[in-house]
Image (tube, rainbow, N blue to C red; front, side):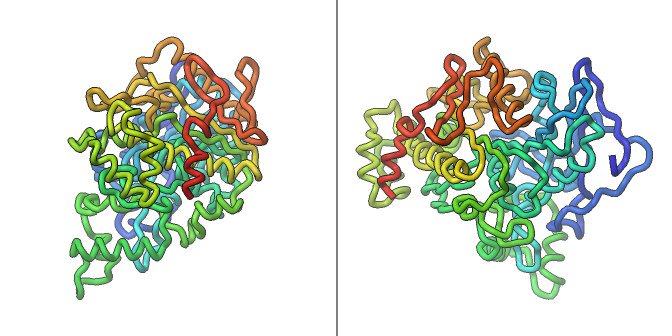
Length: 490
């Protein structure tokens, strides 16, 4: 490696290296700067334990907390077999405020499919998406991810990987980030295929999509000017910058991590109009300006149930019959009555399930469809829906709330997250099939292979592949999510 030698862990079928630094610690004057090179080390560095997660507060869905800014580490899982292997670089989710790479144990994928898997940490929240006058801001976490990809180009050959065959894949916030990499100039040539899992760079989120009281978001991206205005406002309200005590940036860089984390949830949206991300990914993707790499993209059948379960029912605010009408009015204005007729309360076991179905179709399903429509005219595009409504929950759901194929439900099929998931024999077969589809796509840009149900491209028949333990094949995605109805509304 270009920074020094490392010593990892050796198992019967794979090698594991953890806590490898890929950039200098972003501390002190390097807080809110683009990533800098690692200082080379002498001797052999121990790589048998994960590095620190990036600063974050523990959450109900991710019981990980950290105040350590020295967190830019990656992990490599590699088969023991020889040869130059496809490389798959994983970007974790967590809403932009939480998560770390090392919790995604990639052994099953790596060994079964003979691929090298890289997982990584990147700056989050106020440390990763902070815009303020005088900073090259709004995309530090995205720049960290680019640095991971540059590290792969320089070093992955030492682990048996092929730097000319790199697939970038990620889920939720990690998938959203891949939407940015598809259009970011500095990401060009650093990856050759992309897998977007529940990322939705084209999402338009009505009010109350994520939590009660969340505002409408016509885009999940913010301009540099919007981000600077937001930062000036919230920092001003907090009273953290005072006249006569040096520059605002110096004062903010001197604040302790614990204090800054109070505002971290405000800064989850990556800014554009800067060096790293000059243009809005939503606009560039919709208009066909993106790197021409094959894309595999998809969602889960019931994305929104996780958010309604956690942040409505789970916080003692379940949707009531009257509340359902209010949510429709706040989220959809004059179309509320039409939606109430299309999604009548009596068709659902609870008002919370009715609301989650509306939001699932209006925001998640529609944004996947829009992304597929934007991509397939320019590059090979494959679209899926993970449909196992009996998937084991990765977080506790409120009693009586059926999780369905919730947001993140596919992760225990792909990785051992916190241990091996309690999957049935049929579910383990689905997990193996997904690994084969994903790895085939990483090898060649086409998920198909011997022994697999054929997965056609999205064009010309707009095919969506349903992934279910009892059935893999075409989903009637547009009908299931009433996309004609939602198209007529706009």
